[in-house]
Length: 480
Ligand code: TXE
Image 1 (cartoon, rainbow, N blue to C red):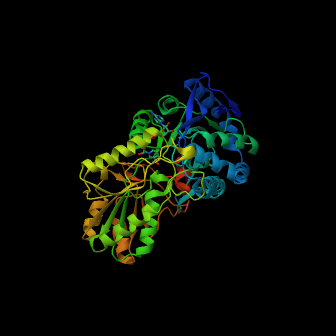
Image 2 (cartoon, rainbow, N blue to C red; image 1 turned 90 degrees about the vertical axis):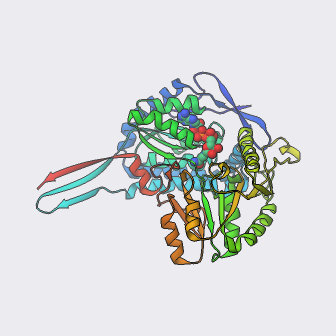
Image 3 (cartoon, rainbow, N blue to C red; image 1 turned 135 degrees about the horizontal axis):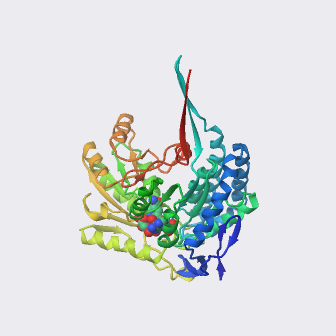
């Protein structure tokens, strides 16, 4: 059985404890490798290495850093097939999605920030005949990046790329459920010639390894993506230590379908936004609100197309929906289906664990599930399920649609389907979410701010926002 290794000070290393965690292939329900069960000691070694590397990395000409990062992105492209297969085996997602979304996006994240750093300029404020102010920015120091299991390499690189490009050195902790591609990535860092200590990857649980990382006094900033409950815990530890925090948390995103939409487009993309990556994307539109006049037609067509999705072996190129990430998560999602029934919901399709024949017989599969008959206030419609489960509800007026959209503690993203230009903007401006998609979904431009309002997070990633996060501003005033 393969033992994955930490990446500390440029070397691959066993955990100090000599202890390992089992890593399960969710499509087979079988242990297939082991992950370092790292402790405070490993974190200390990683922070020491990152501190030692900081002065040379942060003062290296930006162009030099760009070259190294660009090489890393090229190596991801070279290893696309291998990384996509590894991601699929580790997470349960379809290999088709890993090949078309996760791994190409990991390379784009690195390339984007490798070049963005070169366009990151100082601001100047000139007060004629009196003074000149210029605001320069310095890399903040050694930072912690904690990433989740749903888009493993994609979100791992989304954090470390701006940190490294800004001149910070990094201690990163990938999710213990999906450590494989971060491990493979550490090998690529060595090949690309990333100097020792600039990036350190320490594997292990959130409670032990993650907690040691966020508590470490030399970690100046923490970038975290994960659940809202964990985000609250991290803020509780980090805020009193005055660490800078970026939290990208959960969502319960509304998908509003108006009767003046392009119906085929709305259906096709609502199927995508409901079930892509088994619904395990913080941006999935899990609450679908449809204008009453087209409600029955929408539900009928949506259910028909949901039934056509192929669920099963993620390595099969024709599979649309793979396995959930873990048995615990499968139980959580099935628990929400049971809750929906208790709350009076009617399951129109799905709702059950799915038994797949052959090698995936013990995998964690669930049928894509469509529920109607619930109101917007019930728990099923208030709490993040994070699986292939959606509810569909009717609305009568635009005001009602907006009120329903805003009725949860979350505010990450929202999608609108309407051909009415004025309405599209009017509604977009009234929805309390950080990201609004009009007649599209998951249509990403890496320059745009990414993040949520309310309990969906604090701060924004993406574009220059992330470079600002990983740097400290210093204003210099010169009296003329
Ligand atoms: O994530 P956690 P979990 C949501 C989704 C899911 C729920 C719980 O609803 O069902 O969160 O998922 C690390 N100090 N999202 O429990 O715990 C952990 O090791 C430091 C939304 O699996 O948030 C992992 O690396 N780190 C989401 C990372 O945090 C800690 C993506 C995320 O794990 C820690 C994933 C601690 N005390 C789940 N405890 C999104 N926003 O996309 C855990 N971790």
